[in-house]
Image 1 (cartoon, rainbow, N blue to C red):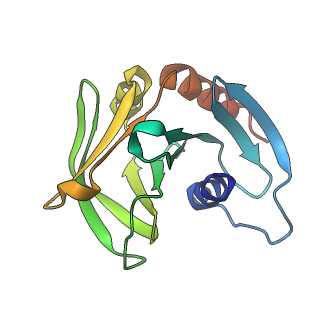
Image 2 (cartoon, one colour):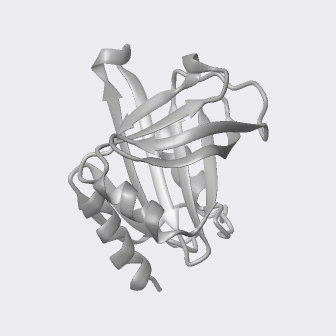
Length: 170
């Protein structure tokens, strides 16, 4: 699970951050439930991340990382049940929550065999929908087998802490 979380944080940091080879010392970190909100020294922006095992899905690992700036929102989803073949491949999937569609046919880039990343133009309505959600879903075109639903409890509190981190980052 730590490997997935580390990979997600490194991937999310790609929002303009240069990853240093000197380690991952933390400049700021807080917890909201089982979410970690942090600004790592090698990242430009703060990240909100949550990882868990789903007993109803063969105890598989699920990880989500959310980061944003005034220009973009980045969502990284890691699921150890995926087996993507081509790093860099662009997939299309509808992004939604338990009660609202966020974006139809959104672009998701394959980062490795278990990770996809979506980079979206900043839109406050996306953040608002995420903050009210308990689940986040990806419904891939022509591939129901890889479609997924991730649990994001306390997302509103986590995103509020992420906003505070972002406004106070050094």
